[in-house]
Image 1 (tube, rainbow, N blue to C red):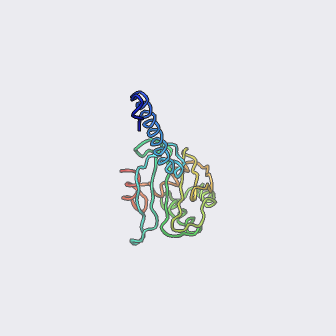
Image 2 (image 1 turned 90 degrees about the horizontal axis):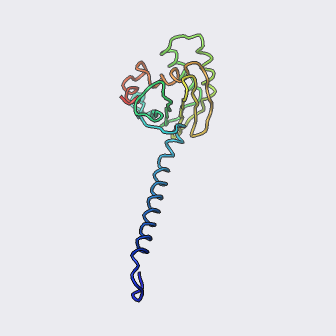
Image 3 (image 1 turned 60 degrees about the horizontal axis):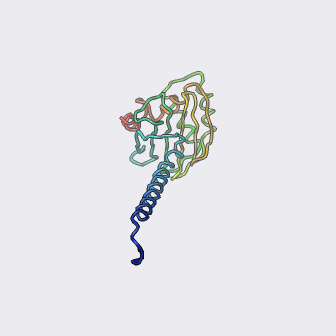
Length: 187
C-alpha cells in the first residue's frame, strides 16, 4: 500500500504489475509444458498425437486398454513413426504374450520363411505383466520396434517390416477385432 505522505508513482505500480503478469505467464507455460511431458515420455515420440483408444475384451472381461499415437500428425499412416501403448487390466505371463503374438502373426501372415527369427527377437522383449503395467511399442523406422515395460526398454527389434508385422496384430483390418482396430487407427 502506498504511503499517503509520498507522491503516487503509477510507473512503479505499472512495472510491478507487468512483472507479476510476466511471472504468471512463464509459470503457466512451465505448467503446460509439464502436462505434455508424460505423453512424450510414455510413447518415446517427440510430438505424440493420440489417434485412438480402445479396450480389448475377452467374453466381456477387459484385458487391456490400447492407445495409438502418431508422431506429429492426426492421421494413421504406416510411414509415420508411431507408438502403441497397452495398459493391462489383468496379468499375463511372458509365455502367454509370446504364444499370443506367434498365433496372431501366423494367422495374419500365414507361414513366412523368417517368421521364427522375428518371433525369437520379439520373445526376448516380453516380460510377465500385472494389472496396471504398460507395454509400449515405439517404432521410428519401418524395420524397427522398441518395446518398453513401465517406461524401461526391454528390447529394440530390428527386422524387415518389423513395424507393420508386429503392430498389425492390433492395427490390421484383418485383426481379431476389425472394429476396434479401426477405432484405434482413428477411423
